[in-house]
Image 1 (cartoon, rainbow, N blue to C red):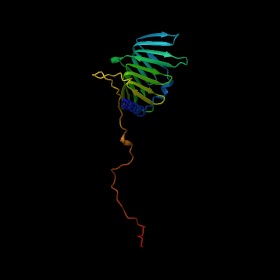
Image 2 (spheres, helix red, strand yellow; image 1 turned 60 degrees about the horizontal axis):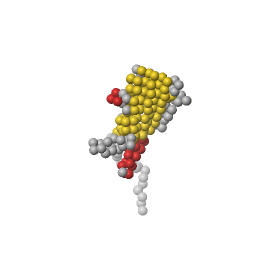
Image 3 (cartoon, helix red, strand yellow; image 1 turned 90 degrees about the vertical axis):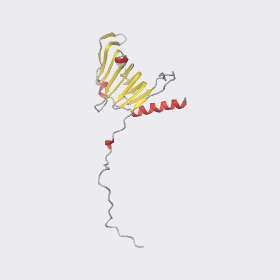
Length: 202
């Protein structure tokens, strides 16, 4: 039991270190736009509920779902909870800083906190960052510290025999080999005698 727990910890640590991503920093200063088929607003409690093809957009960040609940704290920061969507999954997408790539993910429930710039994916969670991918019952994406944390959600996944399956899956692509500056296919190395060395006489 202890060995299984340790292996799960190692997997979580490796994913957190390897799948770093730089979110588009300009997004935090952009206004939040909300769209949906139906909208209800509670001004007193600062709550907006969108249903039917609900969309939240802030800069390059997009959150698409069947039902979206947006709350606002006293300082004006929003928190969005998305549930459901195509195949029962809500979807998240955001451009990475400085590159023409996107971090995207999906889960049955996605929670995005604008104050802490964290996004959490619950149940059937999947996230892709460039060519790297992770899957688990729970994934947390911290845009400020540029880290992912993945775990199994307490071993809730069951096998056909009813035993718990504490499994996190990750695909981490190797770094490009084009960074090597040395060309090993050049001219063969030849040895030449030095012209100014006099043999020693004992």
